[in-house]
Amino acid sequence: MRRWEHGWRLVLRMILALAIALFFVFPIYWLASISFKSPEEIFAYPPVWVPAELNVSAYIALFRDGDAWAVWNSLVTAGLSTVIAMILGTLAAYGIVRYRTGGENLTIWIISQRMIPPICVAFPIFLLFVALGLIDTFVGLITLYTAFNLPYVIWMMRGYIQDIPLELEQSALVDGLSRWAVITKVIIPMARGGFFATAVFTFIFAWNDFLFALVLTRSEVVTYPVQVTGYFGSQSTFWSQIGAMSMLGVLPMMVVVATMQRFIVRGMSMGAVKG
Amino acid sequence: MPHRANKLADNPTVLRYALVAPAVFVILLIGLYPLIKLAVTSVQNVTMFGTDTSFHGAVHYARLFGDERLWAALWNTIWFTAIALPIELVLGYLLALLFLHPIPFRRTLIAIILLPTVISPIVAGATWRLMLDQRFGPVNQIIGWIVGRDVEILWTINPSLVWPAVLVAEVWQWTPFMFLILLAALSNMDREQLEAAEVDGAGAWTVFRKIVLPAIMPVVFIAVLIRGLDLFRVFDVIWTMTQGGPGTRTETISIYAYQMAFREFEISYSAAIAFLVIVLLTVAVIWALRRVEVAR
Image (cartoon, rainbow over all chains, first blue to last red; front, side, top):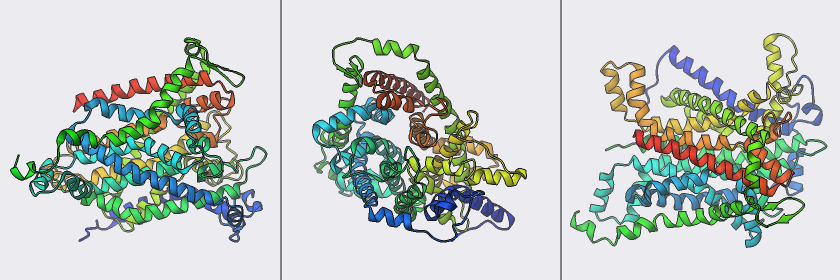
């Protein structure tokens, strides 16, 4: 049963919500329109809001030159590092909450690992990867993103697991479930909304990373943000390629948000069964 | 403990460490070496021209104190964080309130609002550079419609407008993050408790302070901490919009550290800067964590 408010209040809220959505989506529309505009339209004055025709030459160029592979590289690195970080992070968060492993010092140390600005450690990590032969490899980038996302996963999952009543776990243990089954059958379903929200943002953090990908890749596993910046030339900026490459990078994320949203928002309210 | 729970092969002592060990191992793998390397490099004298690995003591640390550009960058960073973070938090909270109750197309609208957060900050910076272009951007065009004449505001060039321009891009990209986290926290709240309070005649402010705030506080705290740390190391969006310019007007600590390491190849000095930043952040965060732990 859905209870909608009635009358002008609902209309007012709807208008406000639409205006806000417009504010957030318009810049992305502008970027998309740039990718379809002809060079004359990009540099027209006053600005052209809707391109006269869909000019896909920038996209054709990206696929012809193989630049579009960068999106696949981003998918593999962000996807696999998210899966690994969610598994290891959830287990660690459970351990920290239920067994108080390492006490307060461990949790503070873990979050301290996320405080370090990437720029500070980019150079030493570069040297480490050279020594290990991990430059320009999937293994290297995935390991790095996993390590950098783990503090986030542990901290978020710690918050969500703390909210789950202990009695639920105890009754599951009484019913004969093993600890592992408690984690997979009680903890994760109970914290499902938080779990998927954390996973989505973990994916986004890895997907968005620019600095490490720039420093640690050469040609084989170049990710999409690095590819985008390649079009900022010192002489001229290739706005149509920037627009097209950006859209190729944004489209998979639109799919992720559209498909995961059911879990993110609805799951959040459903996971809130409090004892 | 009931009997059946005891027969499980769940040794608490083993589990206690086995659950946490893999994560800690991975974090150490990537986290430990760079710190040691930084510490070592910062007391050597490695530059573009020479890899002098002899011990130089604290010369680079001494240099930090007289480096006005460094302190300006640090001040910019603190200032930017202190302004952007409350804006994102408050806007995110208001948005979450707006979308807490069902409205038509709720899911679609939420998905649209989340879009900025999923794009790379590099792309966000490029997008807002396009939006704010003095001639080809729609922002000046819209302002022109409102004031009734053509305007050519130099958003990313005028020293007094360049910070607001960066702030708009930053708030645009990350308010949805706060929104989603707060929406989750609010949705998880006990509805009955809220309704009971409202029936008892508690005012909106009292309900917020006594019921809503305590319930969402753990999640708010983590969200603020994570966004605060991200803001403190802001790099990508400023790099694409202004490269720290005009001059050093929008130089943050990350931009300055990048300039030192990869433009001027002052590897040892940049290692000293990195250490200064890590120490400052560690002190600030431990202080904040202890305060909250005590407050609980």
